[in-house]
Image 1 (cartoon, one colour):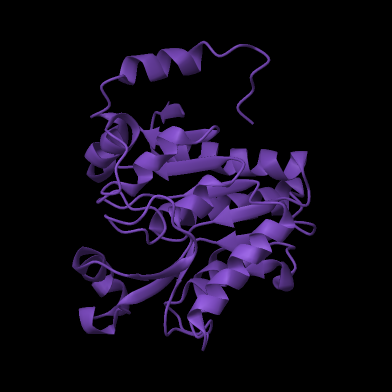
Image 2: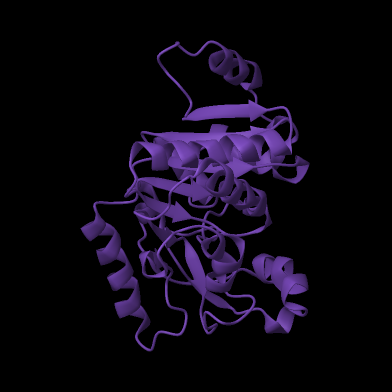
Length: 261
């Protein structure tokens, strides 16, 4: 696991966008695993800017998203399909048919989850998976207590998650209680993983995920076992890391041949 500590939120977002750019430059037909939420919005803005100003090409790439709410159609303004179209897909040259999310309206949910797993497997796996992290340590909608070996499935959201999303929906009662989400095992199968976290509210959970025990109660802690995981945090999110000085020293002293991007 590599921990990159940046000066501020903007730099953390820029580093994350540049890593995604590098993946597309290295492999044009990459399968990108994408995430949603406020943390990712500026990353996607920077990718759009790189597309418009530097001709970053998405035309041969495909994407899969971590999750989708059960019961929301892609046209619903709070669905993750709507989010991805609005924040990224509609502004770059990716083919709509190459953008995949779990279908929250599927009549047969177990079949939909298996089809999602099969798509990823048949593609050759996710080349780069982007992640955020909840204040309780969840990645995707793998709430605390989720099996670390789980695959794409339906998951009941915690009361904390529902309450956090309440203002977005306007009322807690409007927040779906279930979501389809990639599992811990699905995420761990990605060839590379990058997790972005910023702000002081994420400091303790980043320390738990990076330096604490591997536990289903902090599902992000499974990334300690990933062969190629990068954690990008700003100074505020890094304040509880016991090995802060080492992470800074290691990044500053990377070998010349070991480039970030």
